[in-house]
Length: 523
Image 1 (cartoon, rainbow, N blue to C red):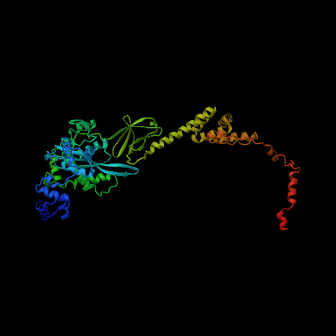
Image 2 (image 1 turned 135 degrees about the horizontal axis):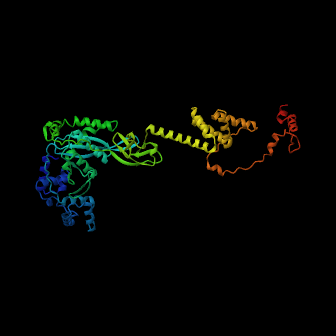
């Protein structure tokens, strides 16, 4: 802003002294556009103000003609066009020239929209950045519904803006309002509008199903007509400034609890824009009676996906793995999830229920599922061992039956008998089992004692089990046979002569009799 004295000096110097705009600006220490503005406000024609020659003057007719045909043509494209026709100037100066001659659109007037109580609500998403949940980084979205008459706000935060969250927001809003407006206005959200060509609109079928359940009319706003849903946009700005700014919260549940309290207090106690004498809460009490009644059952708003179980008993859902019974591997199951719970269904049967995790890469397990798998694995190993004994011996099954009748641990007995099978072979083991049964001592210790006694009576050392690692590289090792003649000296009394003709005894005596060089030095 400049003073009235400077404005008077500008007009006096321009009219009385005939100074140009640049001279006036330089002498009065103001910007030349300030001088131009003062002269234009005084009604002086633009041509007279800008009387100084300009390098764009020869191209002005072309610029004006082109802008009349294409009023929104960008200055950069127009600059390329005049450069092809010989314009020597720079683009920054040319932009000022274009703005001077571009047709100014006439301002559009808007009607102030008014609604009846319970007639309309406006719906939109607000983006509130990203939050860290463990190892996951998730979008924090706010679902906002504003009753157009009273300006009552419903707010709920979600991790993301999927269709399930969109549906949960509607169900929560209708339950909070204890009723349903007759019309809901939507922006061109992907959850609401799948396709739009002019006035032809194809709604999302799930949204139509929701609207049919609650008996309201979904209505999208016109393209580029943000004023038609200005109530919800102002509400989102109000939420950013008065609720979310500098807000601290532990998790999503804590944030939603704070948002619900804020909507019932701070947001509801502000003056109603339609009636500044009353608060939003007072007007909302009047509007609530005009809302349509809720249906008997809420609309089902769960996440629903099909998940395949691989070789391990887990289903993958939303970046995490959830355990299922091991009997369901290699199956396709159905996952139904709320904000708090994940349920896994096989057809109509619920086979697993878990708390929902918003982390990333987490294994959410039911301890019973893991324990059942461990027990099944152990039982499988035990049955494989029993089957091997039955195939290798004739009397092994009878021994196991007697052990079961006497309350012995079949798993431990099976393992011990398999060790004896590997050490002594099938026929000796079967014979020892028969002898133990006939001797009325049917247990693995008796069988082992019988086998050891037989080996001792035959003068054989007890067999030693050699465990060879299951490594295929061992099959490629070449072992060079070693001559055993050098070990004969260990059993013939040690009387063989050395290669130099001396016996081992004489050689040792000679070594003991001859002093070493070290002894001579000390002597």
